[in-house]
Structure formats: C-alpha cells, structure tokens
Image (cartoon, rainbow, N blue to C red):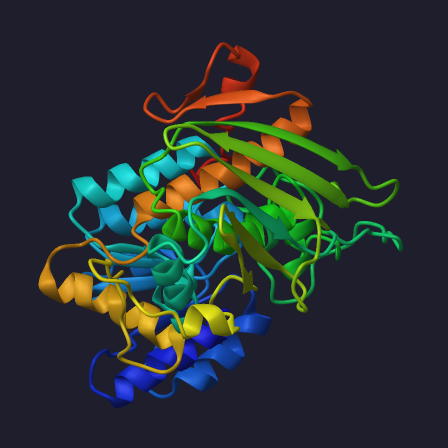
Amino acid sequence: MGKSHLANMLRFQKEDKVRIAAVCDADENQLEPAVTMAGAGVTPYADYRYIIERRDIDAVVIATPDHWHAVQTVHACESGKHVYVEKPASVTVREGQAMVDAARRNRVAVQVGAQARTALGGWHTCRAIRNGIVGKVSKVTCWHYLNPVDDKPVPDSAPPEGLDWDLWLGPLPWRPYNRRYHPGTFRWLLESGGGNIRDRGAHQFSTVLWCMDADEQTSFTVEATGRSPEKGVWDNPVEMEVVYQFKNPDWTLVWGQPGDKVGQTEFGNVFWGDRGRLVLEWEGGYRPANPEAINFKLPPGGKEVYRTDEYEDFNMNHKADWFKSIREGHLRPAVDIEIGHRTATLCNLGNLAYILGRKLVWDGAKQEVVGDPQANRYLARPQRWPYVL
C-alpha cells in the first residue's frame, strides 16, 4: 500500500497539489525502490522520527504494519502534521482513543484508509439502503475467506540485510526475526495483525456502519467462536464467526469466516431487510455496487449521502477528500479518526471475545466492557520503550 499511496501522491504532485518531501521505511529493501519511484529531491529516512522533527512537512501518509499506526499517528499529530493512516486504525481500544484525542487537541485532519466511503460502489449502496431499497434492515452478514495456516513453519533466523528489526518491531515486545512475521505475514498473528477481521473487517464494517447510519451507535454486545490453527506461529483463528447486537435501533452484524457466500467474489456483505436483501461485493471499493443499487431512484423526500467524485480512482478520491478537509479547515474527512477508531473497536473486540471465549457487553460512552475487569485489561497493552504513545 505504501507504493500505491506514493503513486497517488506523484499524480497529485504533477497537478501541483502536493510536494513529496520524504519517504521512510525501516527496511532498505523497501526504501530504495521507493526513493527511485519518488524521484529527485526527496529525502530518504529509515526512522520516521526524523520526519516528525521537520517543520517544513505539513502532512504524512502512514502505511506501516498495524502495530505502528497509533504511535506514529499520535507523534505526527503532536508535531502539527495532518495524517492519512492505513486501516485498521489501531490494535487496541486505548490506542484508538489516544489517536482521536491527539487529532482533536492538535487540530489536525486524520483520515483512515477505508476508501469505500469515497468510492462509487459504497455510495450507491449507502444511498439505496438509507432510502429504503430493502425496507428496514435488521441484519447484516459478512462472508470472507479463511485465515491462512502456517503449515510449513520455519526456524527463527537473522533478519535480512538492510532491515532494522528492532525498529520494525517498534512497540511490540522484542522477539527474534522469523520469516513468518515479515513483511506482510504479520497479518496472521493476533498480536500484530489480528487476521482478516481486523484487516478486511476494517473496510467492511466501515461501509456497513455508513450504510446503516450507525457511526454514533457505539454500544453493543459481541460473541465470537473460532477454530484455532494446530501448528505454526500464526495464531489467528482459521474459521471465525462473530455476532454483534446493537440496540435502539435493533440490528445484528455477523462476521462470517467463511460465512454464507451469497455473492460471487471472495468476500462481501448482505443487508437483510423486511422487503428483501441487497448484496455488496467486497466492501464497495474495488467492485461496483449491485445493479439494483446503481439503478436505484431516490424517492420523494429521500436523502442524499456524502459523495466525492473528483477522481475516477477511489484511492485518489479518498486522499482528495482528506486534502479538502485540511484546505477548508473543518478537519473531519470522510473516515475521520473517530470513525476509524469505532470501526477498529468492532474488530478488536471481536478478537477479544474469541480470545476470552465469552460474550462481552461494550459501553461505547464509557469505552469499557461492562462488569468484566479482565476484558478491560486487554483494552491496552504495554509498549516497548522508546516506541510508546
């Protein structure tokens, strides 16, 4: 995603909307091609803290592994920089709270990279659902392919040349390098990646909350079951079902891994209403909405939903929306950090319910699990000095 973001920024630079000042990666094997791609006049760094210190940099794009998102976002906000941070926003609830607080205190715009809210497929679906295409929706189900299994474990080894392993680990507890942790395979550990529910769930849940007009519906119950892997270092459940129950209005959200595959693609959502159902393949970004949503006509008195269509490429649109919030000074982009935090909370509590093996009652106003001190201790975790909030 870092290279994809850089490509977007190069296009913005050609349009004289930004100037790329620096690129950063703890892995020289990733940094060198990024420097070549960025072109002349761009300063390379291995350590993001040198970028934070630069007063001539106005904004940063964070596409690091999940366990780095919160620390880097908070530090960037504290230095007065606007932030575009990849999803999921955080790996713990307390990290997410710190990110929201840092954005508000320092009056900066923080956009989370759940692009479906500025994509045409998501817009068509949201517009249709909110205006009653299937009537009152009582249930939303998600289907998704399984988490992979580390069926060919490898021993720990020295990190590859050019990788600063200590810096890559950052806030995580120190552990020896293993090819099953890096580069993209961090996704399959509960500690650092959280599996598909925290990865793709951050996309799908964001779209669902938008379509259901439920960004402010922050309290719910959550129950989870799953099948653990039998070998290897990856510990995310291979199969998983998570059920969320919301009140006032009442509706149910189900994460199914694999779930019931209603559509044709690898994952998607189904909105079940009292007058039928509407399917959304993927999450509304990389696939178009279903034809009935695309062809939906707004009824008399119907309400439009937010849309930005400055670019055909929805990744460009999502960043243009972020720039707009900065330029206009309202500092609330389409997936503001508070929305991203609430979405990540769904993902993180789904994993927590699986780990603890019991139903959790979440009080969104107090940001705590009701009557469960052990669960509340999991809402934060120690961070390794000096990579701390």
